[in-house]
Image (cartoon, rainbow, N blue to C red; front, side, top):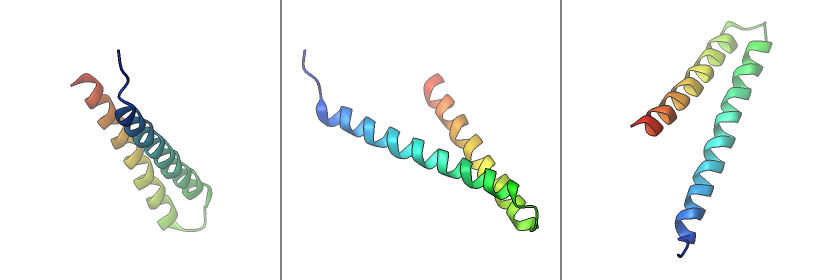
Length: 65
């Protein structure tokens, strides 16, 4: 049995980038909701949460399909 190190490294890199990116977008959404002064911040927060929901739905679709 041999390990394909290139494939393992690729999976690790993609997982790391996707996780950090998704957490960053979610954090921007939380920061947008915490600012009560501007309506655009609430709209941006909703877009960030929608992007997170879309990423999670895509991940579930990859697992199921």
